[in-house]
Image 1 (tube, helix red, strand yellow):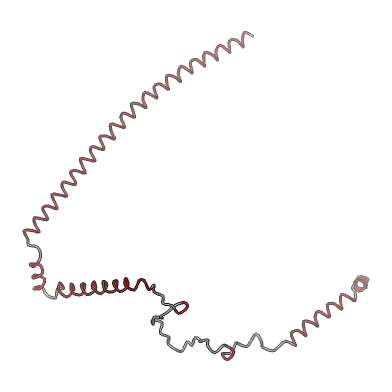
Image 2: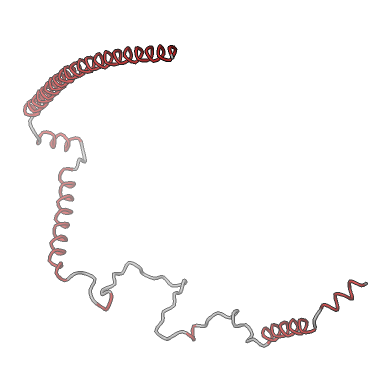
Length: 198
């Protein structure tokens, strides 16, 4: 009981009054606010008259080319109109040539295939070209093998020379190391003798 009494003594009426006023302010702010401001969507009438709204029930043609870009100027460089016209003419010529090739050289029957085959390069000429291709390929292979063999021999000679140089270096180093080791061991023995004498 003493604790409850001491708690009431510590509670200050100013704190209680401040909490009461803050609660009343929040309650009145919510109660007196305009109803449904956040709940109501904007109406089309509140938009400016020149704004188009997207209607999902309509079909929009997105493939139409819009003439004019920013600031109502054309999107195409006026200096490139001649180049664009030449490119279109070239593309049309290529398309027509491809269509002509398909129509002329297309095969609808075996007779047409035979006619096209006979109208091409004669058999003797084809055999002669094939022989030339085979002989040139054989010559290229022969040259490649000789170059590879020559390079291999050069590498072998270079490797043997390097091995001989490395061997002489290793022998020199080993002899130098042996002489240094003998000298060190002699110095160590001499210093050991001096220590024992002293």
